[in-house]
Image 1 (cartoon, one colour):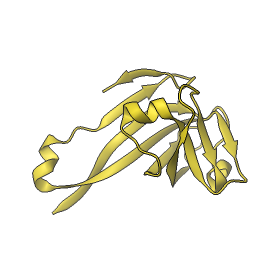
Image 2: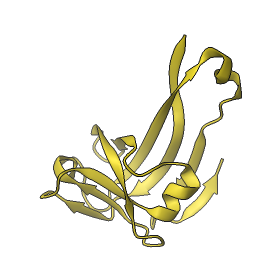
Image 3: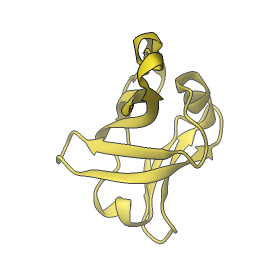
Length: 118
């Protein structure tokens, strides 16, 4: 049997930009993606801690070192610059792989600098 588990989590990210007139996605600093194990075009769930909104989109790479987390397209109606978000990707595992799985969790400060990885 297969079950879906947390793969990677960005905790306490700060929205730096929104772009309503865009096809969709969330643009995340490439350095943050690399540390978290998240990939461009991967599905991601976003949870806005300021207003409780939750939505699913996909990732695009932002400029490395920019600290960017830009919500694009329809998601821009669900977040504002300065909002704090939790962003998660998930992976499906078969039963024999579950005991070995440990998700990657990356904690960010208010400028989206990495302060801790576990």
